[in-house]
Image 1 (cartoon, protein in one colour):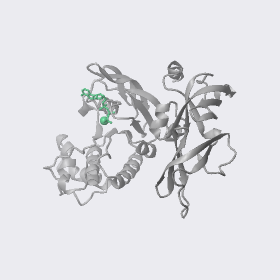
Image 2: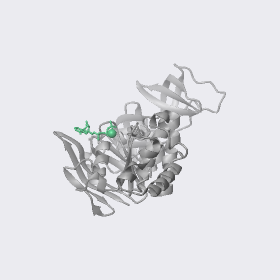
Image 3: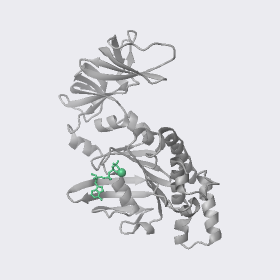
Image 4: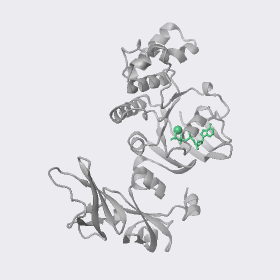
Length: 368
Ligand SMILES: Nc1ncnc2c1ncn2[C@@H]1O[C@H](COP(=O)(O)OP(=O)(O)OP(=O)(O)O)[C@@H](O)[C@H]1O
Ligand SMILES: [Mg+2]
């Protein structure tokens, strides 16, 4: 079932928590709302689930307007961060609860619960209580409880945030596999960019209740439209500057930046003299004397090397700007110590120039 969110506005008193958000989620898609704490992710999810009435806008399920329907008439499965299992009920009864409310026969309930337990790999644990399960197992029970009612769509609100790192990656992979197998339309909320990038078909990045950008993980990472999205998606070098020259309709850009002159690729939103932000991924930069004859070539001093195993992350100082560089570690080599003079190079193709936040607000909105 596809979900359309059209022009949703939600206010709490004076605060506008969601400002005119429009999203179209395709049948079978895993669509993620990504953004910092307080940006309105949960509020949008609750509007879709029917727990909040929007002040403006509509929600459509498969083309049908459900804005006025209560949650229990929407046939939606929800999973929350804190599992929300009933501690005094066995796993079987936790999952069977919604089926009993809907007056299924005992035999049907047994069959449906069994199938749901099988889906989330929890067969054999149905007689335990939630307190006798690990966090990852409890979250899978919550998922089974949502799936057992055969919902038209799933709403998942930070379902992995209470799990430790290793289990989180495991349950994340299970959710993805299950979602694809069932082909169930899923709206997923997280503030974790890595989680969003690995799980999603598409992602909407939000800030202060407003949509910043919608795209595939690849599109967001390769072509962020704003410095906020670039920063949030994990492009760590954001260098402020001013556009000095443009060619090719803005695709080739010269910038006078705080680290010196740079060249990169931009778009038609840029104008000569405009404030801009130059974005460089830590893995796109090279370090060392043989770094090559690139146009973007900076003298720097190693300020701090961090050994991460398969990579070494260097913070290097360029005129007071801390530039981050990830270097693949083939093993056996020693990190450059703090104070080492180095040359940093990065190709123009991997140097993205964006209008500074607010600089071309009208142009940005016009392009949407
Ligand atoms: N019931 C409520 N009454 C008043 N204000 C609310 C209510 N629910 C949310 N808010 C406010 O609306 C804004 C958006 O909240 P929301 O819970 O949607 O954020 P979020 O993106 O889910 O954040 P988090 O990542 O911390 O869960 C916040 O400023 C929050 O304080
Ligand atoms: Mg939330």
